[in-house]
Length: 211
Length: 332
Image 1 (cartoon, helix red, strand yellow):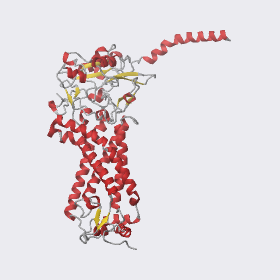
Image 2 (tube, one colour):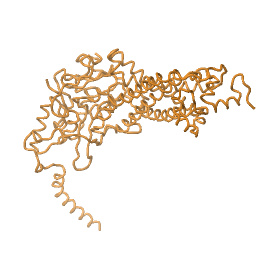
Image 3 (cartoon, one colour):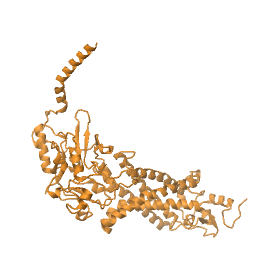
Image 4 (cartoon, helix red, strand yellow):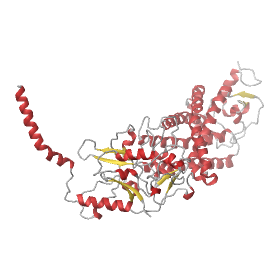
């Protein structure tokens, strides 16, 4: 089975924000929630690079490790999902996440942040695939329909890629050889360490989740 | 002058126009260097990332400009291991030490037995301040411990579905009970600060460890509060102020600091909580089973005359002078 990953080739990213817009539209993401965002490094200077960043669906997700209520689960594809029924909105996952992926609907409401929201790799949540509850809580479940995340599908320069990590790495490495240099694949080493798949980290086992 | 300016400008633009493409190309296109990879295996995909990467975002959420923050790993280690070790270790360690001490010393008795005459030690306001602080402290300690240890201790027992509401209520209670805690803390400072200023006699008390290890019943002289009580007072007051400050900062995340600051605040809050919980366990011990007659001070507010004479002689004499000792005339 594939190990799903994201790879952003910053050499190709043109900061068009299509991935961000596609994500917002596909999942009806409310204002103030940024499941995917574009970060520009060295803005306005030589070597400027833009990177599209969202939840990287890590091998050993720090969010899952620090969650006090154990609301995360990792699918067989390596996609990190969470249960909004269990989440208490404590905000710990944001402190542990290397990529700033977890988002909260309210941030100024005296200790109450609402249920955490983050990129689901277009794979919904623990609810039955394609159910109304799943859509309302987590957005569309494209993976269950055999489709890849819309952000990567929308990318006009194929900078952002989503899919089987081994294939993504292959494409990226081939590109780098052709053009003579890589672009660092930002976040990749932090999220996945070495290339090996590893055992899927499944906190609480298959019983985890609000389903 | 004007035509000359225009001519110069045109000339400049022509030069710039010719030069621009080469200039731009040199900047925007990376040319493969001498060390460029020639096979796929040479492409360093897994570049180790140890430093924070910060850029710029166009969305109005500045904290998201942090692209990668590997420091999260240290915070994760803290949250999943160090914090639990600190709180659990100190609390259990303190309990073990007290249990050993109890076996060695037992309940510290009033040496001369109970006199039966009562001395007013804490009036209603004193006790109200103490119990407001105490109850809110214990509530926050308990809810904090639920959030820290619940995942490993309670979820296997009661399951995810039951633990989430428990954790959610714990979080809210933890946040809101901080208000009475701060009120109690301010009252304590106002009421007892003047009797808790360190003095020379405290040094003697500390050197003899307060007579804790003297079975003969020898007690160093003390005023209203002895050095041990002063230590508890200052731990709670100073510790409580820092706990409240860090706690309120955690309630308004990212209002004053970035991700690194929030992590640090959480570490301070947790370490101090561990220290205070251990200190309070000791305080509860000596105020209940550790010493005969001590609980009355905060229970009914009146202590036995002999207890007062043994433990707080100087304070007892003051009370005697003021006429707060039952059945005795104020000394002239």
